[in-house]
Length: 117
Image (cartoon, rainbow, N blue to C red; front, side, top):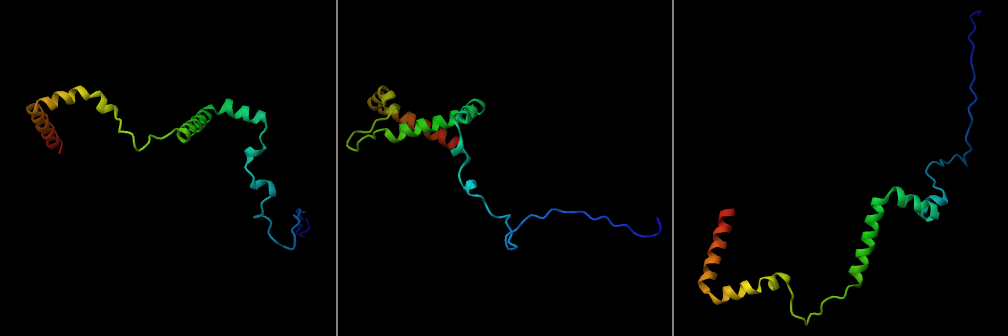
């Protein structure tokens, strides 16, 4: 080499841009739609077989939403129904018949509450 510097040129490919505007932020028309709208039956079967736990949760959610929104509510004219009162009906009759037992149980309940503080 006789002291001359050699330069190497690199050819870079330019990307075409429209009027110098940046096209990085633009989205295509198809990216605004959810991807599952383009699923085939085979895609749905794949998801159900390989991701079965979320599918079970989703089916349970749909089931209980259906039950909740189709359940007829209790009319306001009906008397209240509580299984706790039904189960303790005989105990209530015993306590009602003996006021001393009622007083003793109320005392024990009060002592228990103060001992928890």
